[in-house]
Length: 483
Image (cartoon, rainbow, N blue to C red):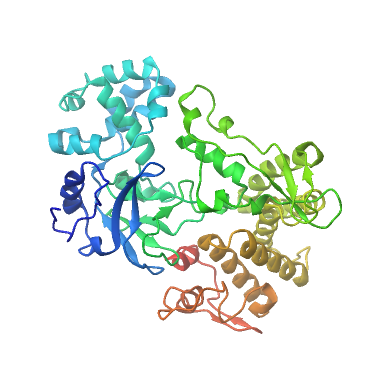
């Protein structure tokens, strides 16, 4: 097969338009040895996707690429034009955000041929979408594309599904765009990679845990916050907006975050028994999240009894799933009130659902965050060292059982424990972590990207009986820990 500047071919024989992929990858990708670690393949279940050709270590740079097309902030004229389309304006925005006069016919062809748009979303498009595209094509810059309304609509669906946009850092808004290889990373609820823009606006994917040869390269389509530490049902409902039913290894396994204490009193946990679903329903009208079916039955892992959903406190689960994230995300100024609310929600979750349920974990983690804020700003605090350390141990143990491969979430919990331990003068062991290997990572010859090494490089000295570190909290601490 023909090779390019980046070395041997990055496509295996199953990938259509492989020569076009090679041509544009050679123009947009910075990493000279990309083809040694990266390959595109095509399967029925994943479509065109990226896999590792060799072992990749945590922290390794997998790809660094320039955008195929950038989406710039809208001009005043473009914003004025979109206002006439009402609610449809947000979907149409990318059509006016590209500098079409600087694109070539070859680039426009690549943008239509080398990216995926879900056929279900295109089928759901109404006549109003096509009519809007026809009207937009009268705008002089778009007219230069010589696209049909159908082609423009297809492009908008491509951007809707493949866009890389940094919502957390407004200064990176100018880097927004569609990226040839970054768009081929699959989703996982326990991803092995994460992405960020560098100072020049290149999209960079790095490994966040060890990746084996032939392993699919993944990141989270719903962000890397604690929203990944919810039930399979909730994660799938969120991902349904992208028109697929998540079948990642974590979603296909037992729903550990949603385990509920058995109502029979055996001391065990009940797990939902989900039936298999496919993506076919997304072509139909109706809210996409409602197409994800909840379990029709549950089963206790200890007494082996089948449990009806009506015999479980799922009404409490629904209420806690709404309240806990709300108080967790409220501003720091409300920390005293939120700490009290989260303490009560934590007790309610433990009583009704059990300490294995994700709402108990999240209420505990959020309560610890609010307590740390109180220790920084209040002279009198309504909790003890023992309250905090026992809660921190529960957080560490819960993550190890229910989300062992969610590296970034475990790093967040570890960093919170380190800060609490520093404030109270206790060693890391009291907070649920081994000072030599806090996340119980597999030993490797290169320790640079292990959690303990990252903390040490930031100036922390961790011991079982004491912790020394930077005296003041810096907002960049957590990002540096992830990097």
